Length: 292
Image (cartoon, rainbow, N blue to C red; front, side, top):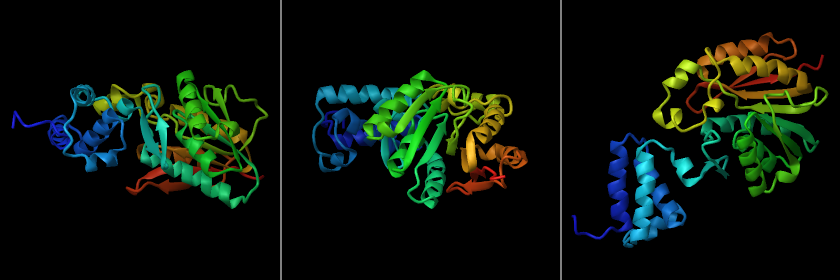
């Protein structure tokens, strides 16, 4: 129907098919998110306005977004945000896009904070990226003070913005550091959360185009075996945990056994636990700092 008006409904139908042809796993959802962003409205408002004829300016803006998405740029970067733990987080290509499986780290930490009652706790979020773990913990645990650490100054800036946006900046500290290098030796925490790089360099080269060419390699590449950061992080975390404190670290199921062994073989930790994601894969290793 070349002469039919470009209503919102027609734009969505055409774009859904176009994105599907370009490899999108969720073409309709992505089309709706991009159109709502271009229109400056919540996605749900599209449903009440399907017959609205799109203005030329809206079509032009939408077309540019769709073209970039077809070229591989993730939707989260195009709209500048991603939901995580029911909160919206600002994201840019300087930070990894938050994933649902990372919410298991937040839940593991919150469960252990809850078990302590209303006692104030100090939490460290290592490799904070967008700050999604740190901010989610601070929002849901009023007794917690959270230190967010990342080697990337750009990531620290984004995390700081997200903390301010969610009203928890007054209980957070941001540190640019290569793991614990810039943290005082005598600084200790009750809980340490981490979503460190854990993909091997070879596997990084085989990641989907949308990840490989757009998300920061610094946030995913962990050397030849995918273990470079874990090997450094675990003993450093042991030194910075108070007796009885906890380390909760997201890992890849591919290196589950190796990471579990690193924690189990470190005498500072008691027998580590494994938390599985919704697909049944081991996703988070949790270790308790020995009280001995």
